[in-house]
Amino acid sequence: MKVKILRILLSFWNAVASWTWDVQDEACGICRKKYDANCPTCKFPGDDCTLVWGACNHVFHLHCILRWVHSRQICPMCRSQWQFKL
Image 1 (cartoon, rainbow, N blue to C red):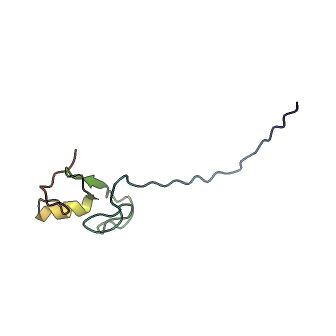
Image 2: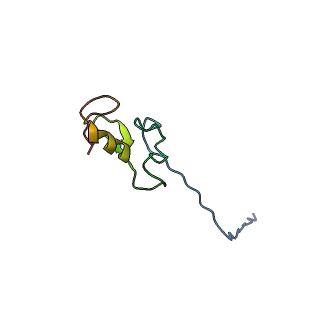
Image 3: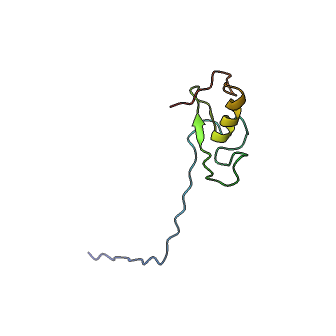
């Protein structure tokens, strides 16, 4: 029995990847932009605007919820006392 071996020489490799946040909603409840996009405060992706979860399990952009709790200490979605989930 003869076996043929096929060898391939790669001259270059283009790797492609994508990621998404593992959350139930698709958009921030305050600014209504998708979680994968920037909040209105950020100009470019990766401007240290991550997602934060509250004790009530609602999720917002960090900059959005910081502006919100500056004037009110409640969750914008369920109106419970806002606390960051640890």
